[in-house]
Length: 490
Ligand SMILES: [Zn+2]
Image (cartoon, rainbow, N blue to C red):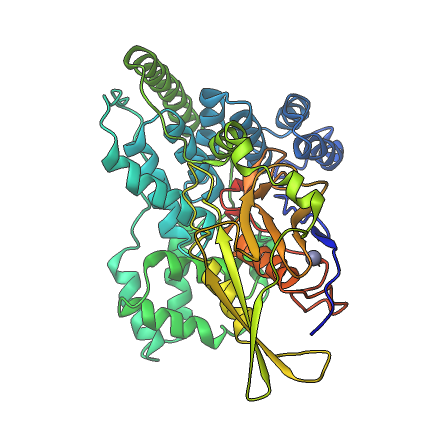
């Protein structure tokens, strides 16, 4: 068998990929518009290290130059949220929601805002809309699950909703368009007929085409990709929801794969602006009423994003989780795993002690351990004497006879460090979150934690790092995903 060295390995993030919403500038005549990209970049730099006050100051400058710059409003909304300025944050997201009812970031921001007040019914309405638009996104799903659970769990006095303010329920697509799509999918009508119905969707803002440069309406449309015909067919026969179909169409138009002659998208009319202002005023009073009730009733609130709660509770129980000392000692004192030689194959059995997950953590990491075990159990290794080695993991309830201790931590492991393990036996610890989403502590997506766990377990059974970037034993991980990162919903 391979001689075991006492060594400690860290798994690190190779790069922080933050997908910033790039600013979308509409009013190109405004003076100072050229400053915007630079201001935006600087603001985001502050934002990413948690300097939200500085970031907001710069976002405000941008919004003075370009008041309808929704991407900036969204960043400002998130920064305000991280400062726990719930009302200001909600109002910022509400403004975007008025302009773009299908903006998922704004919907999630609103849901979180209402959730932070313990207004779960209202939160659910927004999360539900986001979920209908983007059922595949794991962040959207996590918030939606939160709202479903808590709307039933907590009883509370709901604040009176304003008369003017009504929640934008996603407009349903008129039935005749569905018929048209069905006919088109079965070649009963030509492309042109179908494109006309899409034009209706855009004109009535059922589809919000944001990014496309629509001045090229004169040029000739390219042929419509075949897959969209399939999608239309599935939609017409109710195999996929409206949102799925609309997303496909939006993609085509935004990428100029489908050119729809669009009406000039003008700013708001005076009348529309008045209605919006009135709504904003009413909405703001509504939030005041909520704040009053929350204070008066001393409402117990479970926050939609559990990250902060988890880190607080973890710190309170720090001793229970504190493996610093054990990590320092290394794997000394841990028994070697037992093995049997049968038919020229070594069967190596690892006894594993699994620590509890930190309290208040709604994500299941103990459950995904099975996948990490299986990955290594399915593999075949070669011992130094040339014989094959198979690994088997067995859970044990006692620490003393365990070869490996598995634990999840939220303590800072070091800059970009995702986990630690001793080589061959000892402690395996995996970080539950980091600061790479928005400068605040945020829990990782379960898939990310599972990946780190599998890597660290690799060290635990004696594997060293691999130079192959595609190997799970490569020393760094490129794509760490967060479970509740609002910047990742779109
Ligand atoms: Zn490693």
